[in-house]
Amino acid sequence: MRIETKGRTLMANNNGNGKSLESWIWDAACSIRGAKDAPKYKDFILPLIFTKRLCDVFDDEVNRIAGEVGSRWKAFQLVKADHKLVRFFLPLLPEDPDESVWSIIRKLADKIGEGVTTHMRAIAKENPLLQGIIDRVDFNATTHGQRDIDDDRLSNLIEAISTKRLGLKDVEADIIGKSYEYLIRKFAEGGGQSAGEFYTPPEVGTIMSRVLAPEPGMEIYDPCCGSGGLLVKCEIAMEGKRQLNPSDHLTQIQISCAEV
Image (tube, rainbow, N blue to C red; front, side, top):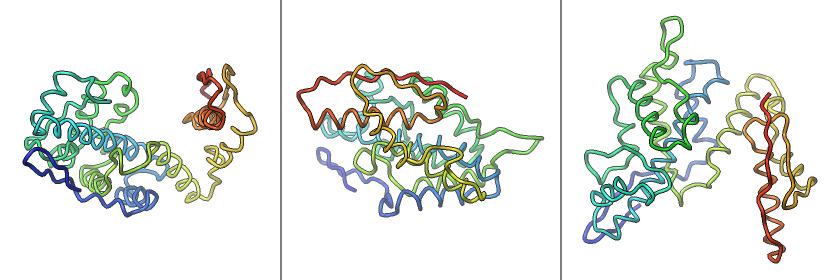
């Protein structure tokens, strides 16, 4: 992909977006096979996918600004001065501003687990909405004196995730939700269990949201709320009805969640 700015051409990484989401995620999972019990792979994979998405979207926004001001270096300086110019401000600045922001994580060569954890916590600190989401996992953690995921496997995982670009025009907005659902289903099936024991399949959730037929002002309560997928589908169902009936005034459904 080429990004034209005034007199310069920035080259984005070859993103391998021809690979399906499922095969890409599974390649990432296989890259750390043996590091932990299979169902726990997602604890390492999802935060990295989330961070890759943040980095690629941040790059897209920096490139947009660079197209207006002439260079990515100037764009980085503007964004640093005014965080409102982007969705989420990432305190990651490559030595070469023309390189991708993700390259800072991808190029970690020493104390990788410590470096990844430090970068994620720095991002969360700058963005309160992300606290408790991407900074929950310590990639340098040990159990009984042994690393939960050693640097070699972590490096392989980062490299596998790097093969697909997750920018604004590369993947669907719900990339994180789809990744979560896929990993739960895949690992449950691999363990000889039904994925339905661990989460509600999206097709079932869609049917349930249509049966509920949510209307503006309704309260929806999910006593077994996990990822919140059912609640999101109710919002989507109501939005779909609004588009069919544009004269209706849309108000957000009041959502109540209860953890089990």
